[in-house]
Image (cartoon, rainbow, N blue to C red; front, side, top):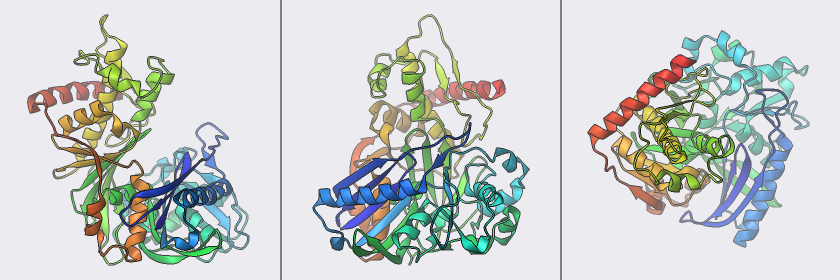
Length: 478
């Protein structure tokens, strides 16, 4: 049995899974988000740690298993969220600054964008860890030698091993804006740029390999899997070959495409990042696109316009009409992410007439999610033969069919929505030789839905043209 710990932005999930990646026990705890100022988002690191202990205990109890019955632990986490703690006491010097936090936006405007892009595959943005770390260090009076930096994965490993192990993996390190993506090592020029001493940094280790022993609920259990949430999801979908792609539909939508073993600068509008691999495999990379408003568009229909009472109503409402009748909704409610990266863009609904109803708006909102995902995949080089998906909105059959139509490629929905945690479990199980290799995991991939494209390409191109017209209006209005 494997324990998978999935520490996310709004809560922590723990799963106990068996050798066929079937879930035997589950635990969940919400965690609080604090908003001390406009644009600031923080977590209590101790609350995060306590949630891990509680969910692990609950998952084990539901599986009827003692901790001594575990073969390994896999950890996956919200990426980019930044912590600094005292090495001796283990106490955080400041709350965890969450990936959503925007306090360093002005600092990011000062950064050498070409250097950051060339070295890290990222763009200068408060989203990533480096400027958050710099902000904390500027306000700490302690010598850097006494401090440790980490994203949530490093913090949890430190706590699980009682301070014996300070590590991260390439998937998380590549989101810090401090890692040379080609060599997968910390970059001295970037460290100097942000005033970060090497003594602060965790060691970069493989995503799959025994990195230490956890003292968990009185048992010693090897920690053998470690990956950031989106890369863990990519691995959980068995996207281990170049061209394999996945999308996770949540409040936003994250699209990752396996880019193979050679690092190349990403196309405009996309990010390059490290993909999770086993210790006996060469490094792999992924192209990533972040859609900022996906499920949040449906939440806005519910909470802002109050035209639906529950997000699940959107599908039935959308099916009440045969088309949007020319209505296009660009949900740039917090700006536009990939591939446009326009923080000043604002939302737009166009094509409204006296005949427009809430059904047309609901249909346009669902279509907008699919259009944004298609924009990301259109920006990727090469063809994607199949899109594997998970997340709450992947249960919406109208959305998934329209997504397949826009892409002209099949869409497969995961049977289990905990694909991220299952990816962490798979990485851990491979390290302790539960399976011989990553290819063996394909036998356990279970599909909850399959969608084939049915729309003619002429109609697809017409629909995309209307979307692009509305998109240009959105951006010019900003």
